[in-house]
Every structure is written in C-alpha cells, then in structure tokens.
Amino acid sequence: MRHFVVVAEELHFSRAATRLYLTQQALSREIKELETWVGAKLLDRTTRKVTLTEAGQIFLSGAYAVLGALDGAVADTMRAVRGLSGTLRLGYIPGAALELTGLIVDEFRNRFPEVDVIMREFPVGDPSAGLDSGASDVALLRLPVSTPDIETEQLFVDPVVVMVSATHRHAERRSVSVMDLIDDPITSADTDDAAHREFWCLESVRSGTTPARRVLINSITEEAQVVAAGMAVAVSSSAVMQYLPAPGVRCVPIDDWPGSVAAVGWPRHETAPLVAQFVEVACTVRDREVETVRQIEDRLIRR
Image 1 (cartoon, helix red, strand yellow):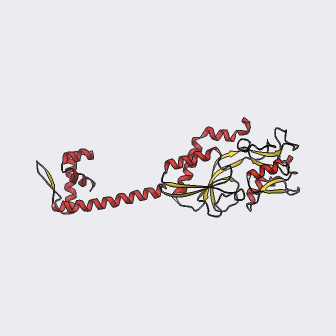
Image 2: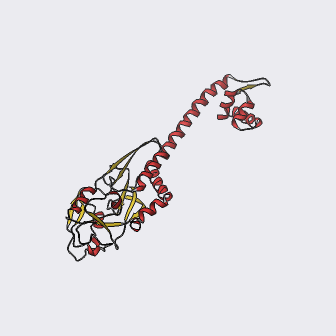
C-alpha cells in the first residue's frame, strides 16, 4: 500500500522505484499483486505516462487514511512503551544518589524530552521518599527501609562517619568503632521505619545494653546543629564532609559499620513504562560512571 502511494504521487514508475530503493520490475510486480488483491485496476500505464484510474483515486484516498491511522497508532504505542510522554514523580531523600543524581536525571531527560520530571525532596522522616504513601512513582533513597512491596537496585555503597562536636572525646581520633559510640545520645529521624532507624542508631550492637537515647531531628541541617551543640552524635553519610561542612562539627570514620547503600526504588507491582525506563537509565549511568562511583565509595580513603 505504501508503495502504491509513492507511485500515485510520482506518476512515474522509474522515479517511484528510485525513491523506494526497488527495481522497476519489482515495483511493477507489487502493484499488479495489489490490483489483484483489491479486484480493480488502479493505474493506467503507457509508455508515455502513468495515471490513476477512478478506482485508483478512491483507493489512494483510503490508503492515505489507513496509513495515517497506522502510523499514528505505532507512534502512540512507541511513546507508551518507551515512556516518551507523561509525568514522572521522582522522590528523593537528602543526599539521595549524591553526584549520580544530576547525571541520572539529565540522561533521562535527554532520552525522553517529552517527559515532565517532577522532583521532590522528602523529609528524613520518610526514608521511602514518597513510595510508601504513593506520592512518588520512583525514588532515590538509602537502604535499609522497611516499606513493603518495593523493589530496589543498588547504585553504590557510601561509607559512613560519625558526626561529633569539636569538643567531643572522639573529635581528634582518626577512626572509631561502634562500641565507642553506644553510650552517647544519637540523632534519629522521627520515623516509623524500623529498619532505617535501627541502622542509623546502631541498634544491632546494643543488645543487652542500655537502649539508645535518641534525639529526634527533622532535617540534616538541624542534625548538624544538634551535634555542634554537643547534644548528640550522628551517624551519617561520608558525603557530609564535602557537602555539609558545619562549624563545630567533626566527622570521624567508623571502622566496623557497613556503608550506606544508595539505591533507586519503585513499587514492586508497578508496570508503568516511565518507571522502568528511569530504572534502566539509573543503572546505565551507574555502570557508565565508574570513576564517579569509585570516588564516592573511596571518599574516606581520599580525605
């Protein structure tokens, strides 16, 4: 049908064949097969010229309509499958994926310029970055989280440090162990997420000891001020040494505590193409930006 349209537009088999990258004989054979299928002669062809028959004119009008509808359906399908349009709600917590955050979002927007990406930072009390409430379609977060029915893909493992006041007994040490910290009050987000709270409050090493004396905080900047005032210590990403230098606060590496896993997360049963495409882009950027990931994971070695 497409080949017939080209012949009808050119009214010249040789030019039509060149345009279609076909031989003239092959194109003539196709038109004959089409006429047999339609049951009517569509073209009058002489050695001097090619003209449309009355049936050919009717068929050409219908062919334009059919091909236009088909092309539109294919375009709509590809946009849906590739996530080329629509809105993606991207949640993230403070720190999120650090240096990878901008790279991931830029790559996604370059691939899918018709997608409206809405970024929203969620407070430290919501470690799911909006996935738990359904406020986000996909999120950049820090594991562990207790939110049920979400899938995650690790991006990198960020070393952790303890933030202490400049006058704290450990302020001048090169490193500490978790047992050095369990007697101190410790900052904690006001969250119901047990796994998240237990990780950042060092709960697994407190078995048989006095429970943590938690000092609730609502933001990273508030946490820094609480630490600087000597009211508590805080376990945090090593990125605070670079991105949140605070007067009166020292950051000391913890020798025997696992790093913080930065991840992209999404609802387990989510089937939206936009979400799948964002996750794919995040993993592609992670695998491409080997040096950036190495610098994040080796931040303490380079300090």
